[in-house]
Image (tube, rainbow over all chains, first blue to last red; front, side, top):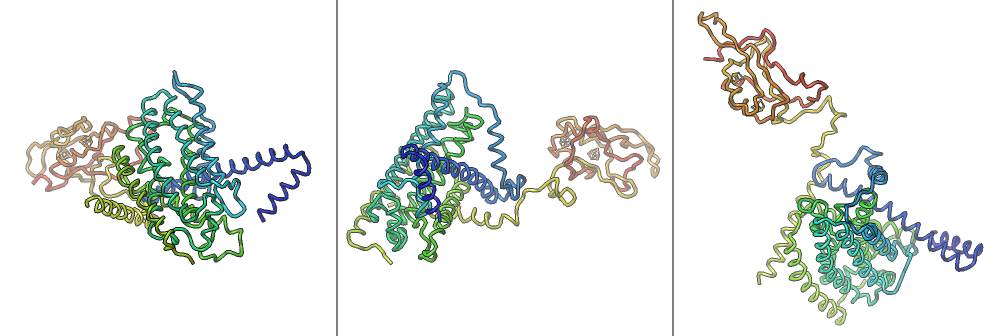
Length: 352
Length: 158
Ligand code: SF4
Ligand code: SF4
């Protein structure tokens, strides 16, 4: 069904206007669709986070605006839209205004390569995983710019911490995904899912895959600057960290991007370790439309796991953070990579 | 070797923590401590140790237990309590005796520290559960705790 709708639009566009214009219009349409997904998913995730947090803390959470508080974040977004955009004196105005777009565009670009289902996949490049890792590090430039240009010591400290954190944990994210690429033999996300038709990678690769998954979830949480790795915006020490000086919609951009990044990390984990849009044991293989459902189910389960981390663990100190990465995760990851290579070489992977 | 035992211990303690919060998450619907306040105004019960305001309980015969010893007035760090006292004739013995005329309590100055209640030798005052103390005129926050015409309960001073 989705295939035919897009195909019809595609054919119609190319029939009414010249080729160049048509493909431009098509790109714009796709961008608009993704922007909508971005906004809706972001707002929904913020609401989910607040409800889940409330339940972890024996509270009720937002439940006044709309049924079960469903419109709460909508109302918050409208409130933020109407707020005045303030700034500091002597701030580097150009970079200050540019920073939120860096963060939001990198999140948006990462969203484009994520396979929501077999057909719902905007940009299936052959270096998908590589592209995701590369793009996810661009977001930190936005954070650094924002922290530096707002001319505020808290923002600067927060941004620098973010730099330290992202540079370190980038390695673990990359290496743990590389471990899985050893099995799949391809960086293309659709190919990776194809391989998993004979068993999800976390089963195929059993022990090293489980270790890689754990490392990925830990370093992924650190990459998105969420608690317990939220030194970047540690409220008790830094005000609000790198976005202390941002207000109104520019603040909301940072906020939404953080939640979309969480979604992206979970989506990568779901794709690489849990078969993406494949149904468990192929139970709904005959109905490919359910692919989106399975993909979102798996992603949401992992998002929930990250929220669980956040509302359980206390924040790490900066030196503990670096110890965890350089003394534990990285060596484990390297050994794990060799282990996985051996496994694949000796044909010890499990295949259904 | 402590490297590996550290990893093991780390993972174990993290999982323990997650199981605790996980249990809270599953049972939170039943044990939520949030009160949906204006909605449940009629049924809302404050918990026992809640410090709303200082009150002086009276019996049905309009008797209280305050002897006017002024210990609470001295104990209060904020000067919240003012006891206006008088001397009356004790009917049983015919002697002159101190009694309270007005127990004045300025709620607006009270920090709910509880020293007055701790210090009272006769348990004449205690915590009330009322928390809806907002008023339009702050002079209404000054209250006289003993009811008009109330008397000292028999046997409190023995
Ligand atoms: S609770 Fe504390 S502040 Fe209030 S009246 Fe008693 S002693 Fe004074
Ligand atoms: S309330 Fe208690 S402490 Fe205060 S004057 Fe009366 S008997 Fe004494």
